[in-house]
Image (tube, rainbow, N blue to C red; front, side):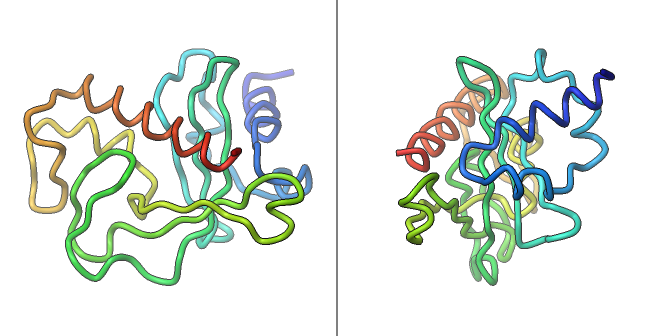
Length: 164
């Protein structure tokens, strides 16, 4: 088994709030398939290129990564908004409401958890910005490692809320 195949299988198997069929149908970008999951300690996210309303968060956990399938709302915030996970402030339209179906019977009955997240789901990149720009403003008074740790903590809290 190649690393790519192993990575794909591990990510699909880590999807905590989707069926095996949904996990099998999601499209993984090339950069995700090439990851070494054993060395990743960042929160990773991407939009499904074949279904852009669908996204995935891959969050480090004690027993390996946990994947959460997300669905985007119809439009982004109309004003400047802050991502609830990475706490980066973005220009209008770049933060969106994402909802995650809860697993099991609750999810089949329509129960979800939601939060406002960077529309591109690239929180791990946004927390690495050294200086604020017009498009991205990281939390003032924090360094990159503090922002990475905060992102992991808040993403893990979101996963806990989804898995309930």
